[in-house]
Each structure stands twice: as structure tokens, then as C-alpha cells.
Image (cartoon, rainbow, N blue to C red; front, side, top):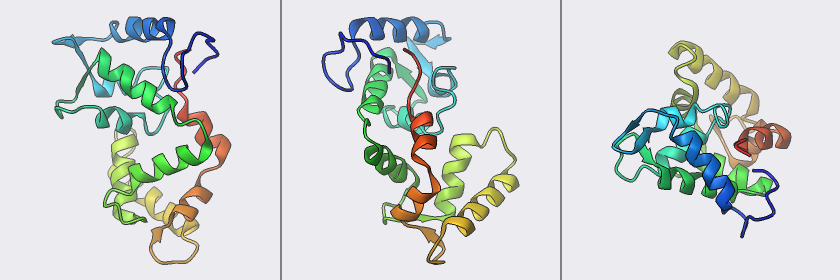
Length: 168
């Protein structure tokens, strides 16, 4: 998230970075001082990130669909702590593995794709994408993706390029 040498610890935003995030946050329409998660996730700086919507939702303790500036900054700081590629893969896998059984089923893949990009594709097209993905990457043909199979689905450059918000 930039090379600001005043950042005190990995994953924490410096005061100047918080100021930039704050200015961008306050450009959005606010309701009771909070912004819609969908609008935050669609911000140009993070809009290309396929899992940021899920990260932001995880910080919505009230399940209201809105985040305060404080919660938004917390989400970005959490996300920035995922520095090494293994942490990024593991976090992404956990987002897809909704029942926490250690595998990504076709239903979980479809559900996550609907959440992440469903507004861009018709449902039947997403279902086909999920089925094709499972067919190609399910190396042991058990109908689900293991962590190793999921990792092979993503290249490190692909994941890293999508994991970093570009506020800075």
C-alpha cells in the first residue's frame, strides 16, 4: 500500500494514509456517517479486488450493509497484513470455504462468485464458470477443490495483483 516510511508497523496505516482514505470515504454518500459496503468495494482503488467486498462485510458487525470510517480503515489495515503469498492464499481459500470443511464445493464456488461478481454476469453464466473451473482444477475428481487445488487455480502474480488496494 505504498512506501510511506512513516508507517509504524506492518498492516497499520500512517496518519497521511488514513487522511487519504478519509478524504476518499467522505466523497461517498453517507448515511448516519457510514458508507454502503458495495460503494466502498466499488471504489476505483479497490474495485478490481475480487475479495474486498467479503473483507468489508466481515467488518460489518451490525450486518447493516454500512461501514463507518473507523471500520473501513480497520478492514484495510487487516487486509494489508496479508503480506506473504501463503497468507493471501489461505485467506482467499477461507472466504470460499463457507462450511469450513477444508474444501470448496461447487455450491460454495457458485455462492462466492455470485457475491463477488454476480452483478456483472447472469446466474447461469456464473454457474457455468464455476462448473468449468471445478472441472479444470479438481485434480483428484472428487467434486471439490482442496487447498492445493485452489492454489493451483491462482497464480501468485494474479493473486498479488488483485489483493492490494491502490490508495497509495
